[in-house]
Image 1 (cartoon, rainbow, N blue to C red):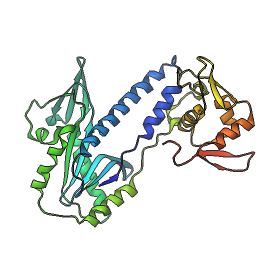
Image 2 (tube, rainbow, N blue to C red):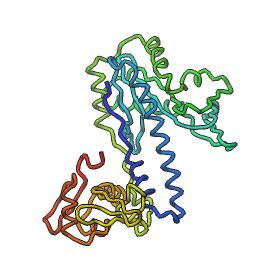
Image 3 (cartoon, one colour):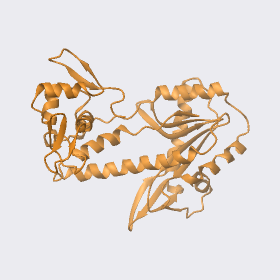
Image 4 (cartoon, rainbow, N blue to C red):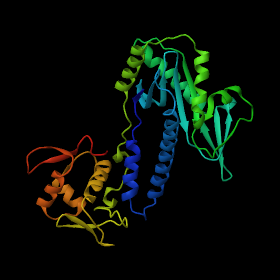
Length: 323
């Protein structure tokens, strides 16, 4: 069973809003675009592994995706955790392109792409550290840890994987995501003693899900020049900003396209960049709507919660507003 699904990361949503509304002539836009590209690639790699995991038998396992667990003054993250009666399995997904050269002697992964060498932390070592942190978490909650195994999935099918020292652990731990159904059975052969009942498996899952603290970056910490953020609705046809609202429709100044709900995506951008609240006055300024009654009607039409009286009301996104 899937105990915790993988959700679209809030960090990516924030970066998408920033890139969408950052002026093209600002030098920092390229930095945000590069970071967004990396985050999307990582998420795509995780979803690729998820796709192949969905094809295996889940009847005797609990799968938890995307955990971020507090430990001491920091957090440890688990891309994928599989709980079985015999062992726990951590799988870390990497979606690197190019040639990947594993050098475990120096705890390094070297990526060569377009004749440029980059050094990355050893993902095998990363999963070992995660296993140690998970073991400490379980002990803290008075759970005797079963054996914990670790794997590294390479999700980019075009990546070239090299193990120049013929290291046995690299050969054993590193695999392509499409091969996951054949990497798990050997662990059942290795660990034949049952350590967890179904209730104990669910107990571990509950503790981890309860402890999970999703990463929610604070855009204010990025020192964004908020006065430069592009205001108004974005046309879904030509992607130009600036739409006029009349008679229940938004009309694009650039191409003339008309639509009814462009304010919804714009308000999502606002919440992601400016924070989780907005007043009617702020909405009018952001959407370039002159009429207070029109602004109130648009705000009332969306899945928002609110606080305060009609005059001083503050609106917040509802539970499913970002779905």
